[in-house]
Length: 235
Image 1: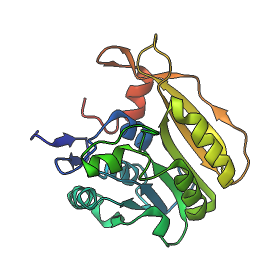
Image 2: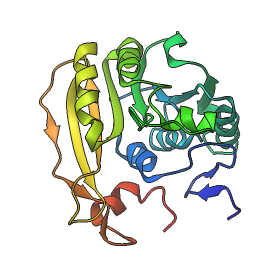
Image 3: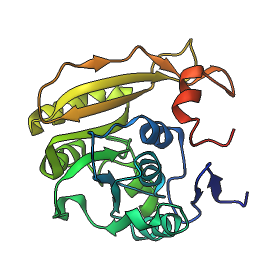
């Protein structure tokens, strides 16, 4: 595997031009996120390398998947990754600010949003866009999701556990309701660090998973993590 590549079972991610590389958060979300039955339109907000866009295209072979990003280099990289994949005919990558996106509503939306809030930005502008919420605040994200999601649609997101209360507040203000949640810790003895969350417009019974663990010991995936990602990881 060449430098700057991350190879999955059905596609390869080239990432040398992207500020944010393939990581556990994106892979978790792409494998965990659900869509309604018979969904045919999926949106990936902040697509970056196109990882989650490609994962959703693999998981849902009848759906058209649109990845949107504000950064031009990311859009070029994601476009190339999609074009080289078996799902190229069902993927479209768009450069746009999500607040300006005016399209038909989606059956499902996924997002691995910028994860630093109220912290110092870095000199690299592309990396700042990808990592810091100044480029996509939780308020902007949730209001955009409310506008772009069908009434029966599902929105799935991954956030650091420390930022969970902020996201829940903005979701409530936007009129989105938490329907499923899964807390993630890296090893059994550590506290949860990440939270996978699903939102809807319509009230439903909340499903809360027991806290899941990524590794039972360093570099050995837990059974839950293995089964969640086995269709993607080579090993």
